[in-house]
Image 1 (cartoon, rainbow over the protein chains, first blue to last red):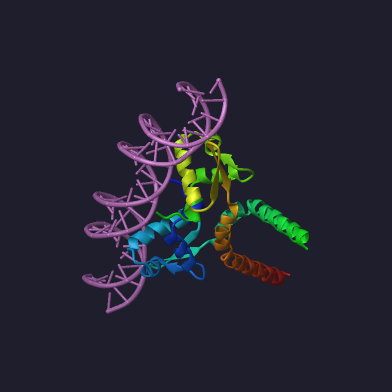
Image 2: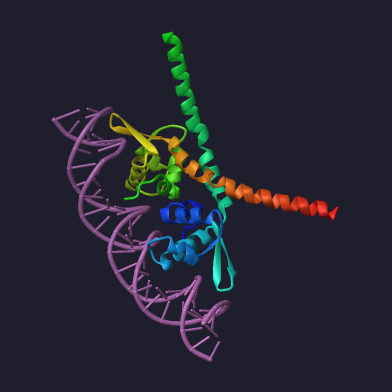
Length: 106
Length: 106
DNA sequence: TTTTCACGAAACCAAAAGGTTTCATTTTAT
DNA sequence: ATAAAATGAAACCTTTTGGTTTCGTGAAAA
C-alpha cells in the first residue's frame, strides 16, 4: 500500500478535507456532514490522510478531533520547486528573445 | 476520467518520467528503455501526462519527442503555497511560546 | 441503567488504474 | 521494394480505489 503525500492529495475529496481542517481541527462527523458521501467513505479518506501524516487525531471523550498537519505538504513543495529553475529558465529565454526582437524593431 | 495535474503526479513512475524529461525532450522508446515495464505501459503513462498538459509532443519523422511542460506544476505549487501561512503560523507561535518560556526562566 | 452518539471495522461491489500481449500503421533504412 | 524502427491502439487481466450497507463498541446523556 503506497501511502505517500502525492497519492493522498490526488483525490479532490481529500484535498477538500484538508482545506476544511486547515483553520481548525474537526471531528469526523462534522467533516462528513459537509459531503454527499457517507460518513464511512469520509472516514476512509481520513484514514489515508492520517496514514501519510497529513492529519493527526486526538480523542476527546467520544469524539476524535482531526487536525491538518500541513507542514507535511513541504514534501510536495520541495518536489515542485526543484523544477522551477527549468520553467523559469525557459520563460527567461523567451523574454530575452522578445527583448531582442523589440530592440531590432526600433 | 479525471485528468488533473494532482492525479498525474500521484504515480511515482510518472514523476520519474517528468524528471527524465526535465532537462531535454526524449522520444517514447528512449524513456521506456529506462524502466522495467513495457513500452506500452510507459506510453499509457505518457498519455496521461500529455492529457493533463504536463508533457507536449512534437513529431519528427517517425519519432515523437516528448517535452516536459513543467510550468504546469505551478498549479500544484499555488495549491500548496496557500497553506504555507497555516503551518508557518503554527511554527511561529511555537517559537513565540519557547521565547516566552526562556525569558521566564531567566 | 438504558439509550444515544461518535466512531471503527467488516463484507461486499463497481469502476478505474496499471499492467500485459498482440496487431496495425507510418517512416526510414537497406 | 522490403525490412526494420517507432509508435498507436485494441483486447484482456488483476489489483486498487472509492463507495456502500451492516454491525460492534466505548463514552455520555437522560
